[in-house]
Image (cartoon, rainbow, N blue to C red):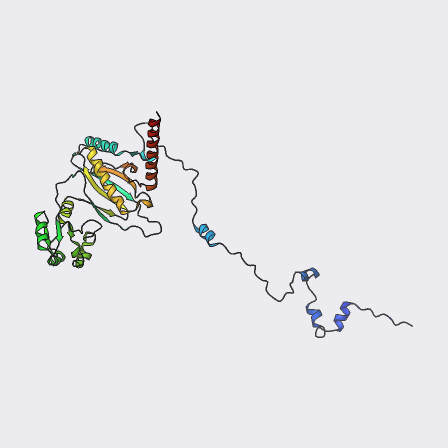
Length: 338
């Protein structure tokens, strides 16, 4: 005879068996659905981070530079106005030839009823950069203008230990001439002059004046240190001095408004040529902007290209000479054959 099958429900089992016997069944009866267990990771270690590709340092530097965005709403200003009455900021600033600008300055003087005996000034903007080298330091330059416009005679001090040279300097217009005995009066302010020159043997003996004179200390570069005392005095008594201000700007007078235009232009050309000596031509044009004005008028922009020194390449000159010689030879052969 088969054994009877025992059937019981969950309620009867839970009633007969307390929770202390089957704790897990009672506490975790409400479990998550079976698909939730698939979302739980069984991995007992952290995932390995993906390596970021290395960037090229050159590309990184290029990306770090800010890109200039072009404004699509800006248009180039027109060059010339159509009538005589216009707003200046709506048009490009005109650039004139030097002779035309001087005629305009003289017309302004007549319309303003000002004195014609007023200075004509120029403003130059310089490019002091030297590529990978350090930029040029501000300097003080001197030049002898072809047409002098002032009657002032500068005071010049000559440093020399030779009594004969000192006497020669005084005869040719030196304000003071002597050796080391002039150092103390200059430091005390008893002796003041516009320029200081000397012979090369005195360069090491007057070093206490270097900090006080600064740019006016005698140097071979600006011609203030030489054995030709007479030539130095003739130059520095009537020379014209200019100075670089604010890092790269030069403002200096070049003549009087009542002078002829060709004389003012000649002085302008001399000043620009002398300024360009302080930077090699291989670095490009030194003067980037040029304007002119009188003491009572507005400034006018000038075309500076005609005044800049031109760089002559020897190879091109030699090629031209060879071409000329070959042409002369051909002409001689033609004449002989005829």
